Length: 199
Image (cartoon, rainbow, N blue to C red; front, side, top):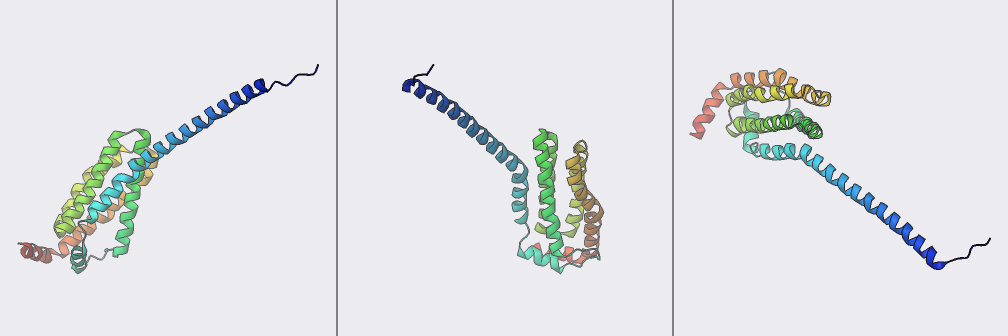
């Protein structure tokens, strides 16, 4: 039997198909919006604090501070300034990764400790470069070990964070502590002179 063609019925089928596809497109667009929003939140959680800390910390390292730093007597284990800058950049990436993992794991404890470490690092810049004091730099590193080791302990259950953070912790313990101590001991005279000039 030959079926008759009904334009109205065909139009209704086309309308239903268009609505179905339209609904699918809207769901896809909603999914893309949610994913973009989630990605932005993750990016802000991971990159926002390190970038802000770097900007704030660099405020204490002006040309005069760098000139003062270059004039200090250097320990034998002193690295060139570009190496310090590279280590600093890697440090911000490492802390950003720890913050990213804390965001994914919804671990506020790790996030708060990481923020304390970021703040402590910038306070060290203020103590060492801002005050132009090798002694403050050494004592500041010793104080900084407290929150850093607490953060290291708190990420123990998250292997990606352990892998990211452990090299920095070893750097601080194995290099920063002896370097700042030797820098302080070699520059006892200049430190007193610097304080007298500020007075």
